[in-house]
Image (cartoon, rainbow, N blue to C red; front, side):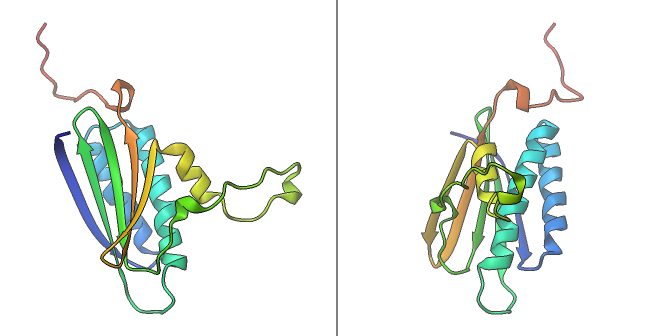
Length: 155
C-alpha cells in the first residue's frame, strides 16, 4: 500500500487543544478532498479518544505530549494514529455498553469507545516504547472522496 500523504500534529494534555486538533484534522481532510461526513466522523472519533487520553491517561498534573498522525493510502484507507505516554490502557478491551430499557436507566458515560468502534472500520491498540498507540482506520470508496475542483477530464 502506497502512502501518498501524511500529516502530523503534536498537542498537549489540555482540553483546549481539542480545537486545534479538530482544525488540523479538517484541514488535512480538505487537502485530501475527503467527503465532509468522513471528516466529521474522524473528528468525532479523534475528539472522543483524545479527550479520554487527556482526562484519564495521566496520574500527574505535568504537561504531556500527544502525537497525532494521519496517513492516506491511495484509494484504500485513511488512518489516524494517536500516541501518548500515559499509563497502559487498551480502550478496545472495554466491553460494549449494556442496553437499557429507559433513558433513566442508562449509565452516564462509556459510549465514546462504542461510538469509535461503530464509526471506524478498524481500531487497533498497541503499547510500544512506553507509549499507547491507537490507530483508527476507515476504508475509502468512491463516495468518501470528493471530486477535485480543478480536475481535468479525458472526454
